Image 1 (spheres, rainbow, N blue to C red):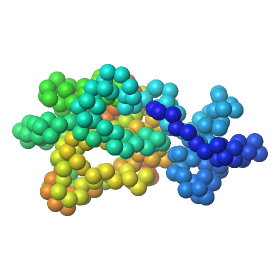
Image 2: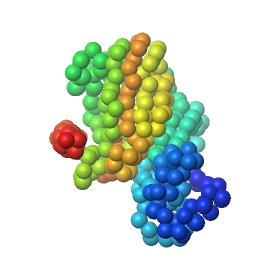
Image 3: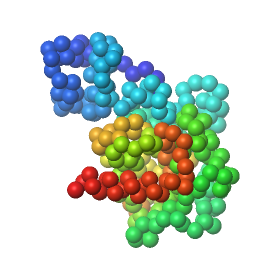
Image 4: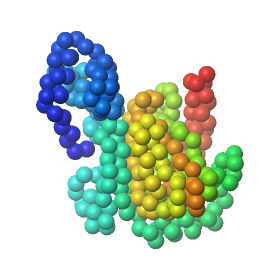
Length: 286
């Protein structure tokens, strides 16, 4: 991640507050309420000061672990970045904390169409309660050469082994289709946590169908070939990564969803892990 700097006067104010013994959460809340910073960025500002004075201090900013190279991140330099840019891939938007990145033209129009055409011949694995809303087709590694190539391309672009990706999910929304707000990370302590999500838009919906990051007030419209990436190193509700698929008001939407894990994943075990996660989530809400 490229360096992210802050105003010197702001840093000086944070230093005076921390020296006076004010709790870091209270400082972050003051920055959020009085200065208009998002809470994750306010946390990041406070921690930049803490690191200067106490390098070994306990940190609560999710972006910190990303900076340490422990989590996926879009490649910044080198042959892979040069190749992607020569193919027209550009960063259209990024947030620092939580980490969100929108790439344009990650896949060509033809590749997107080919994926949709191949998927139409595959029987859906999962459907919504109202089957007219959306359906999901799952692809394990080596099942479809084209999707395998896309996974490898994403793995290269975000410096994350393809062996740590869950099965690719190809999601098709009809008119009226939507996906309720949710977070991808597993609730509670798990051995192989989810750490990031990639959404590749395979067509441009006629109307509606945006991906809404609810906590951030950020809406990304489905444009064919574009890629949306966001990471969640900390599996907590205030990670800022809750997201939803807004209703398609005209036409349809196709996306390819890829979820990254901390370690290598066994595709055959994913369904059991997801069911256990849903059970824990239900218990946490009751």
